[in-house]
Length: 135
Image 1 (spheres, rainbow, N blue to C red):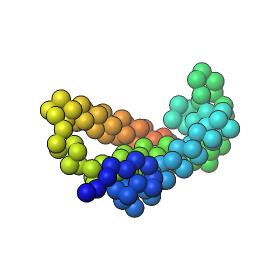
Image 2 (image 1 turned 30 degrees about the vertical axis):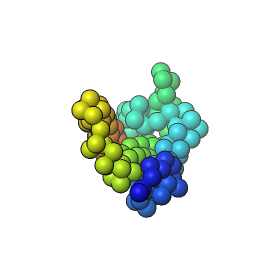
Image 3 (image 1 turned 60 degrees about the vertical axis):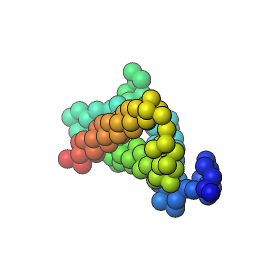
Image 4 (image 1 turned 45 degrees about the horizontal axis):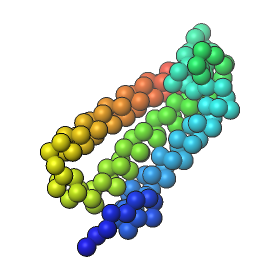
């Protein structure tokens, strides 16, 4: 009988889920650290007259093209990695989802759809941000 383990060292966690979890954690940490140290992120920033601005709150901070592109790239990596890690974590425990009550299944479906939509929006805006930095 399999046990429901939680965490990176769970007996039910696949190698894919563990690797994707580490990638998501490292890229999110790098994104947050660079955002704090550079004074903002490119997702909130803008490009005007060939100048690249990072934004946090209402404060704009001018940065280089490389900083802008790096910020966009980091923000494009962690959301899909986190979503895929969640999927691979849930896969061995799918029997728990299938045996759940109807209300719980509905809640899980809503959460999955919400997660996919948010991840998609962040990824699309990150890729558009990266395109602005490149061209």
